[in-house]
Length: 282
Image 1 (tube, rainbow, N blue to C red):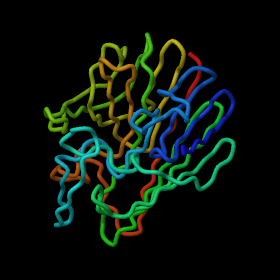
Image 2: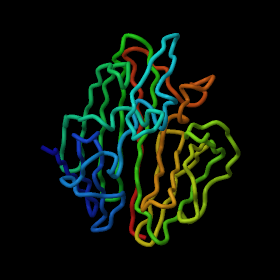
Image 3: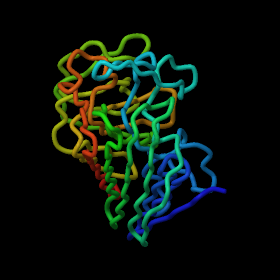
């Protein structure tokens, strides 16, 4: 049985699927889709949703193995035939609804160490809808007996329209190897252009101010407590993604993971994050 949850504020309507990775099934302003949107009852997987959380890492974890504080660990395939595991575990698990009102909802997920991720944690995600914005908050607590690597983020998908345009102030871009792992950092003075002419699948550093998205129907702003941004503009898909994240993809394999945003969280410690999507008619 699917679990549907809906919030409304002004002209905004938010549909959630706690059972499908706490995913946003859809977000609409009136009858205009803000995110890639499906009615909650019709959503079949978080992969097809409007947005899902990236926990306890974003992007790819190289070749499904890593070493942490002297211990070797492995993860499992979770994304087609990708040689890496992708976007953590929370987006593929069922969450519980812990509180809800007409405009707010809080969902929770408790992770016991398993083959997909070896460290226990608890996670809360809070959605706050106002007439002109959606706020999402994540709070991650390390429930393991040892220090654990932690990354947080969100993966929103936006409908590509005729005049979809991005304006983002940045300083650096990570380029990927053929398997999709970031290997080289290059100066990137920002992104300012029509989505149709962009070809990014990259993590960016030095994100300043709001990421501005606009098209013939909507004007949107993304702000977040998270310092990195993944921008994905696939040429052949009807969507694009602008994803606030806490670390560079595969930071766990870099010589200094902390310098690339990955947290080394003590037992019992909490890491929280937020992102805000402001929406107005164009």
